[in-house]
Image (cartoon, rainbow, N blue to C red; front, side, top):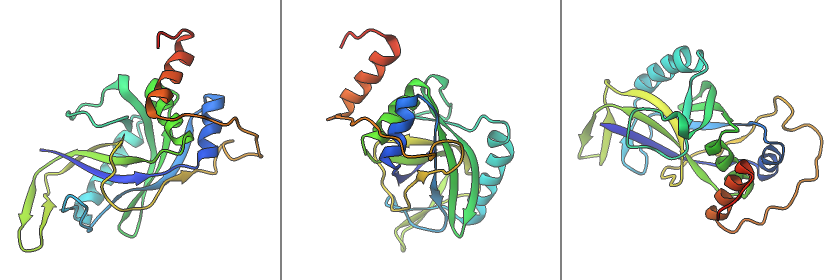
Length: 206
């Protein structure tokens, strides 16, 4: 069973605009997931199970620099390299919250994501994993079972759980100085995607 967990994910607009202008990676930090809390789908992730998976994720994909995620969830357990938008650089715990440092890449999907952030659009961060659940009818919840396997975190359009927002990291040169940035006049997502495609190809058939 494919399990997905959503969280709202907000990035400082000015920092995202700078990354778009310079075509550089964007680093953000914040809550990726929460254990022992009922989400809006009624699902609960036991901390011991989520802690095991986060530890394995750090030792495997993160340590090997392959902790990639996609822009939008596919209905698959396979990460499609053509749609990779970001990579998780670090995970750690803050109470029951899984915190993370995420690098938004300068890939086609990553550039779309950066442009969405630069326009002040809130998207969701969402885990993707495989496993089974058990239902607790009295409490109106389903609990993720011990066979759960964390695959990745993706960015999605529909966040459905409450949680913290991501903020820009202070490392590298992203926060250095005060740079006057251009005003972006995007009115909808289609305009953003059109402008990115045109910029990348040098021509536009829109």
